[in-house]
Image (cartoon, rainbow, N blue to C red; front, side, top):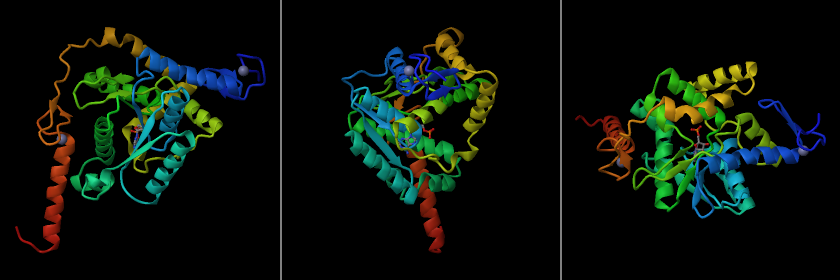
Length: 314
Ligand code: AMP
Ligand code: ZN
Ligand code: ZN
């Protein structure tokens, strides 16, 4: 097996591209795709203050590492969604990685906003699906911290498989709004909304894993123990099956969307109007944001519970 670029002995075979490469040319190929996404979608430039949302999983670790490698000087942000050994160990791992590359890690504890509860416990009390509730808390806090600390761009580790499976789900249910809005870069559309960017959208998940392993980047294999039933996983599995029959189909599906979106899905230019939440001031389409409403309702339920356990009759 020879490297297609230089003819030396290849060390990897990228099945999605039917491409054999030596170590050096694999790095060049992989990082080239990240650079392409950053430039094509004007995600950020060298002068911007960038913060990468890191969960400890391979995608966000690789995003953090590559932006550092490419000279963007990013900091990283970890949201603690609960407490316990796994979360402590994740934080420890992130901290030592930050030290090893000379980057700064910012940590925010979600339980401080949820009366000491984890997102999982809070979702149970609120009778909300754990994944979507947790996702909402994550998005809210990532934006809030990035905004308050003055960052220009918040980067996430979403990869090609994430974006393509989400697109498939949105098309199956004809969620036009999501189809239009879920773009590799999301501009600032409210004074308290930080610009978002996903520099790994052109990279397959398998290749990200390979890159992390070859570069010796530490990561945790299963970041969220509660995501096993998530619908997004069903679409991901379907696309994996398709990909095994038709090499490259996931990439061409997603690239087609990036190319054709404008023509197929016309924006009516009535962009969703964002108000400011009357409690926290962050963007919302209603009067009070979902985060503040959840907090309010959680507080009520906890007080009721406390009252009941103390035998108070109301
Ligand atoms: P997920 O929604 O779990 O697939 O994660 C998507 C992206 O959100 C990841 O690639 C990270 O960039 C970010 N993310 C997920 N969990 C956390 C967390 N606990 N703290 C900070 N960022 C996170
Ligand atoms: Zn080579
Ligand atoms: Zn609010």
